[in-house]
Picture 1: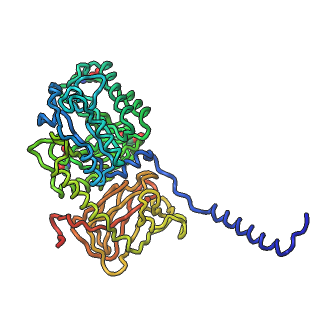
Picture 2: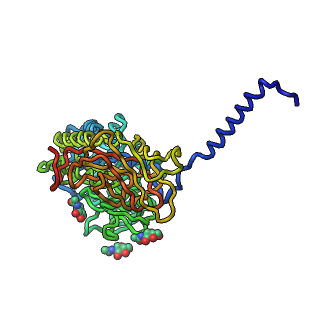
Picture 3: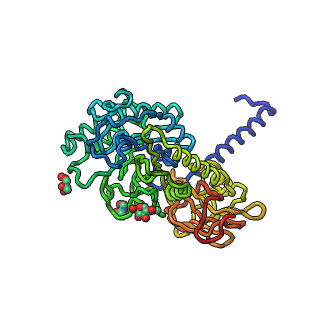
Length: 494
Ligand SMILES: *[C@@H]1O[C@H](CO)[C@@H](O)[C@H](O)[C@H]1NC(C)=O
Ligand SMILES: *[C@@H]1O[C@H](CO)[C@@H](O)[C@H](O)[C@H]1NC(C)=O
Ligand SMILES: *[C@@H]1O[C@H](CO)[C@@H](O)[C@H](O)[C@H]1NC(C)=O
């Protein structure tokens, strides 16, 4: 081999050794910790980030002033003369809502689309001379604004004669499911309601066939039923999750339309083998359908519901029913706007962002990439603070925020877990200048504490994780001021 001139050789050697140094440093980049099963699917993660979904109960009940129709309604009564699905979608967009779910068929069996398999539908109504299709107008309006569409198809059907004949009805139901999931583009959530009257004929639903068909026809859909398989029910209809709320649960211990273990749906199960986050369905009014005599809930009630659902690791499914004209009532639209403004007022400012932050330990040391500063960035899933690997039983992990100059003034603490690696936190506490101001159990995707004592002034906020499955992974922390919060006792906001 010819000897290289000295002048060429030295720089190449330097480069070569720098290169190998780079390689060896790269090899030592600390890796994320192992996940703790079960994990969410991609579509479940996307679903959870929506936070609020709009539900629209609409049909013959809107015109008969009832909640559960009998199935004997004359389809002619359905005549929403001013129906404008664009108005529904605008209200959702203004409220920051990215998915809307329409009752394509409720228990009365009346179909909002012209189904080939029954004439108990818009085809027999006065609306648009029987030529209309509410599902079509809904999905088109949503698509035009970049909003996703979901559909509800009631299993219990009080009109259809086949109901009660297990084979025939399941075939009928599957046929309608195929219509809805092939003719209307992408559907992101399908809602299988477990509700059924006490005296309804006894029959088995072929859930396995239904779910398989749904998966076959729609790739990015989440299937809701009391018991999943993607999204579970929270167990009540007032928008209230358990203060302990695991996304994990044993699907074998829950069944559609059955009560199951008391409180199990509401709290989930730390040992649950299935990842099945809960949806909290509640109506903006008393009823699910529009009634002239009813009014939307107060802003303070809606905020309470938000804290009790989204703030407890769930998604809020908020029903806003179209009225007899086919529009969302102005009072409801206004209330939705107020809710969005209130949430923006509370959460758009995070006092923690101006704090210096430190933690009990960090995975991979100082430059490991898992430092506490990760809880202050805008990524609430994939950048997180991870403590260092301590020995078994070493469970006092903490993260501390210190105000830059003088005091912090807040009454809401937000904590989020990197749930992409599994829900872990079992118990946590919050201290301000050494005094405990809140404590709780699970965190999950999002946990919100409205401080019982009202607004606190302080300079050092410490979040302690006192029990978790494996290492806790905290993806975000927020300190917020909620001017709408009026605790019963304690100091109030002036
Ligand atoms: C309904 O049918 C199921 C399955 O055949 C049976 O186990 C159940 O006891 C029946 N319930 C009633 C109320 O008849
Ligand atoms: C919600 O409903 C459940 C079940 O009916 C009840 O136990 C709970 O107290 C209710 N919560 C609120 C906040 O109304
Ligand atoms: C759920 O399943 C796990 C694992 O099999 C088990 O340890 C736990 O006790 C189950 N929970 C309930 C409520 O049955």
